[in-house]
Length: 599
Image (cartoon, rainbow, N blue to C red):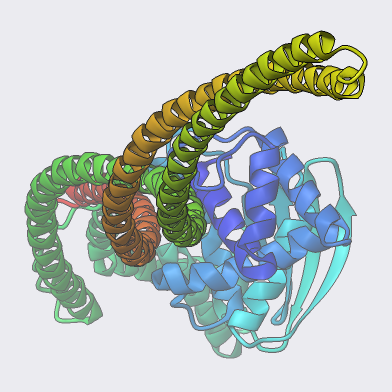
């Protein structure tokens, strides 16, 4: 099946059932939905039949019905695309021309095998229409026949007479007369069923007329005389008619030349009768035809020249369109890549912004905690300062304790001196008691009482001595312990004084650190606030970049659409070039057809 027919079928199916259905079925059968069928392309019959069957199945209709719909619609499309083929007075004349149309198709499309169509009138309104094709597409043929009737706005009755595997014979009844036949009875009678010579017919008529005319004169008795007498005028009539119709042979030769497309020779005869008029008509017809064909050949030359120029332009357009297609495809690929990169950048930026927002949130939290820490540091500094002051106060008190300890040590030493004095008194008392005892012993009985007192005094003196020694020992130990305590207090006082000095240094350092931390905190808080602003700015930039990404996607889609449009444009230019070449071939064929006419 030729591509031009398949393209018409697909176009019809798209009109009837939509592009989506046809695209899907074409792709399921191994064709691209954008496939362009070239006119000379040979398409596998089985494949197109499968496509048509799938379309019918998708529409829940029988294949026969679909073929009839396609045929009906196609004939109307052909009427729009090839109006010259439909310029006929009635449907019958159009159907009668189909054989010639198919002959032209075979010439134009080598390898084409269109069906054979033949219509033969059998009455003034009836005709036998036969269809013969190895494909046996009877329903498509019937659909086209019905569409033809609708195109010419005529009603016909269709009666199937005979059907075979590859042929169909129909009887068509038209609503208007389709055939005119004029019968000349006198001419028919004189032919006697087999005579075609005009001179013989004239001689027969003359013979019969003479015989009939002589019978009343001579009578019916002497037939032998009548026939020879009648034969002489008949022969004369034959000779005269033959001589008078001699231009007929020249006229026949001239008409044969016309049938053979020979319009070169102009013939003029002088007869003084209708033959002269007939030759004038033929000559005038030749002149008209020659003038027309001169114009036709001029037009074909102009068409060839025009086709050559268009071919040059189309070739240039084809090269340019390919370059544009390559550039647009590269731009489309770049746009797609840019859109993808922009999307990736947006995604990465979004992740970074989210991370930055998380960091900012943490920093805001840290800012709050830092402010709390600064407050705690301030409180700590105040506490350290208060503690330092308290320690200084304690140091002063501790110094007083140390001084009191020294005073206590001195007083203990004074007590020791007093105890020493008491110890001396005790020794002296003991000596006095001893002396009293001695004197009492000397006094004898008179000094016994005194001796007892002296003894008691001595014992008391010894006890006092012993107590003084014990007190002295305790005081010495107490003084030593007080001294140790004072030394320890003095040592700890030195340590406390040193630590107090260090604490004051720490306090001062803490104060400086607090001020520094406060400055850093203020700077950090300011930085965090700036970071918040920058985050908002980056978020705004992200929105802009997101908009740019959307624009990039739109640009990518637009680039793809432009690429598709340019691709379609390139395909259309290719089709244009193919059609121009086809037009060139048509003009060449037309020129070849015209070359048959000799002018």
